[in-house]
Image (tube, rainbow over all chains, first blue to last red):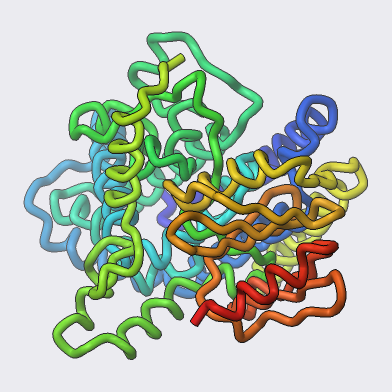
Length: 301
Length: 132
């Protein structure tokens, strides 16, 4: 098995073609589903993330190979190992993703993917440049210590990423019930990208939505709730570099200004946390929304 | 190395081509605020619980200023075909020029917006000076 085989490299032409098809759909059905400057930023994110991956991928691979040399089990390349590796990698992805939303250090990298106010296939390519700095790989790399070959982990991770591409669309409403019950779908993932309080920090799944159902973070898409995409404090700019680094700069500013005993909290507490309570976390927003909804009950469609 | 450079060049060309095509297909749009209720809805969506008492719409509908009962002032402006909002915490970036109110939030990336508020501009300029 070639260690440098990357499924995503082979998928890129299909990505381009599908974005093109969705644009044609948008022209007829929803012209505001795309905004040319937003699309350019999203695609530039994607291109930049591949460069960042080239620069840092070798280090992650070296670490994975070292862990593999000290593996706990001899799993090898059996057919069932591929399936098991995919499921375990998706499980690890769930926790990486959940942490990416709940710990500001990890959010500083992952926020890149959420910074568009649009939800289309180009948004799927809005990938982080700073995942290595955030140490995002620490969640999935233990699979090598268990005994899965790093090449196998990289390949199933690539297929996981490819799966997640097509769910970034408003063109598909809902899929058959059995599929929606098990798999991550456009409907489930629209919820994840929403800033509506009822949807905040929900549906972290990569491929299988079952993790959210198991760990209490699942929220179905509500028919009466118009989705707003992006982040709680929308960026308001199409500047690529600011879009990439804004949260890291925000962390640096907060740590610099905070009293000593609060400095580290700006790294590990949830996004929106502040030592003086002057900002809102997603939990605070959801609670405020919940209290208001209870005072003025709105029927759920 | 040559292969990587070619791959990068091809990807860059595809990126630029798709963005160009998005513009060529006429995607996007020209959203305008139609009435104060729409501005109120956007304000509540931006800051959950922001219940605007006073609203001043730009005459072309490209933005709005809103104030709630707690005295908080929110600026809403277009961002592409979507809307973005900020609570104003300083009057430092506010300039009045007849019916035009120029507002800078202090965030360089967010930029400066000039709202045509007509006769309301002077009233709002005066009240914004009370923001510390």
